Length: 257
Image 1 (cartoon, rainbow, N blue to C red):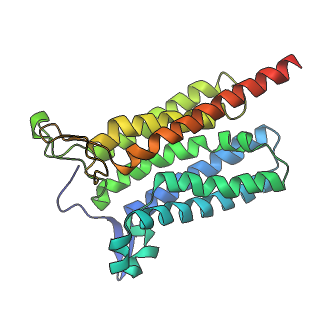
Image 2 (tube, rainbow, N blue to C red; image 1 turned 120 degrees about the vertical axis):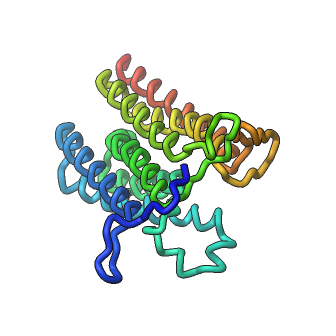
């Protein structure tokens, strides 16, 4: 979706401006933190430990998200190196955010002798909400644009809206699964599994991203295969499927022992 003359700023005062992207990212982090503390303390985790976890996964997520985005768009940032740190201008990789948050989260869990899967389950609402809000923010930054799809009556696919709806769907699915009290890790790895499928099929195929392996392009309907995200999706699906099976089998062994 490309809306001409839309402002990326919520407001400006003199030379200072607050961007929609930065505001919505901050709101998603705040919501994730509130949910983490609320549900974590209910499940017997100490509040101080949860705040420490939140700091590490937020910092790691931001660094990982920006690092992967810069590396996958390296020629642009080599030409404009000052833009590397301007995350308020947009440009965060979702896969990088998950990886960047998971690594310090895992190390933090080991240090405090906590179950990583337990902690990972608690951050899913924040992840889903973040994806929902950030894709809306992408509209204001005029990024994550869709391919032209004139045969469907679209000047461009509203790829940001597709992504936002994916985040909302994942949040609803999470809430349904959480009521069934699944084994630890099932909520997080289910999120990763279904996010990967939904993004690859509904969002990524319609996005105007470079095709690293152009096996299929339909200009009339605005579809293309395969982008870099398409290519990394199968190993992520295999990993999340394996971790799901492992979480469920571990729970079954615990019940029968």
